[in-house]
Image 1 (spheres, rainbow, N blue to C red):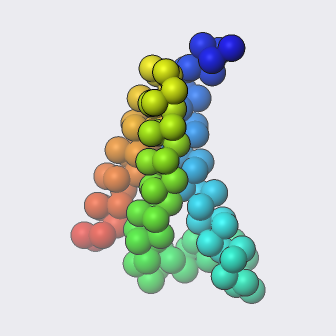
Image 2 (cartoon, helix red, strand yellow):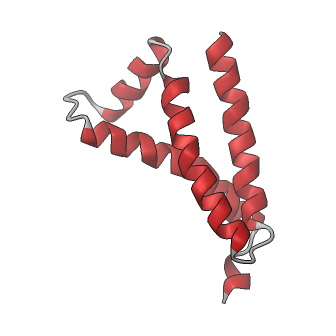
Length: 96
């Protein structure tokens, strides 16, 4: 059963969506009246998106450790790949 979900592409999809879900939760908890996409655009223009994505990567770390310690082999590699791509984007946004 575990082997069916142990795919690299599933890990990449999970790794890219977890920080966006964390951003969505922060948006919903903040009771912000703006549209979600306007909220993301405003974070980008105010140079705060990199800080919020760093918070979102904590979710990737938790999922990575959970899958790594339960015997998956390819799923954590996909999550790590997405985390590295997010990290490069964060560094770019931070120094831009």
